[in-house]
Image (cartoon, rainbow, N blue to C red; front, side):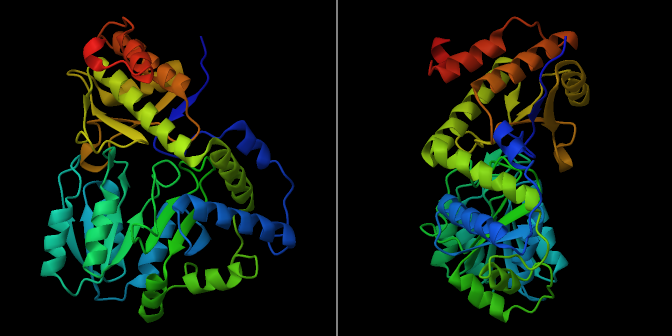
Length: 386
């Protein structure tokens, strides 16, 4: 028996047919008026998603490239920077700053636990010279969403620049860059935007531009000033990923047709359904309750289950691809992505496949309890009544 492939990792995400078709367009001149119109449309649409009136820069890179652009444009060697981290991607952001010569003050929390705004306030009081705060909105390595609004408020009250890794959250989880006082926010095309990897989206506030003018780290490809200058002419400084721009344009059309509020509610609904299905199958949810991500669910396996064996069986037998743990959680957890073009039926298929695989691996019988839990969650039936 064959099954339609289910790519359910935290990104890259599956591409809708509309997006795939958009990339079949003939190549165009990236210095011509057609690309200028596409760039203007993407920029305006992304501003609406970020909820910002600030500059929105499009860089041909992964999300990490967008984060590196923030460090390169804001940090001078020797600058003190606070990095709040509770997982692998927070670690990466801190490492990026250190690579540019920053004196990184690490505010660390146990993986699976959110960053505490009160602890951030204390750290900032102790380090008045740390002018920049690096925050991770959605930590995909642990399936956790940090309380970004509260964290940003603490940093802004302390008159620090707020720089946010929103790679796996923006377009799937609500963010209000301007209202929350976020100076720089970064996202990536391969997540909830429903496009392939290759474009980073970066919003930059006036406060960030003032810091950019003073920062002395070397930069060339990721020079924000060059990106803004060329964008004003309807271009990018260097050759952009044109087919990814086609895809991102179509992904934005789909987001706006559904309505952002509906997009966010759908992601929250499917996250609850995924969590319910995994719990019914004997998995233990990893991230702290109340902070679990709407884009990826992390869970510890039932006793005796080999995560690598499970993932291999799901892929080869059922066409379902899920992620494992990262860093110190490698081999110790599963991560199921549910962001972008995902619906109830996709969650049912993934949980059903996991249940069949657990039986084949002699962990638990396939008695339908996982799918039943997903269905009940989608229908709004309380767990106590199931």
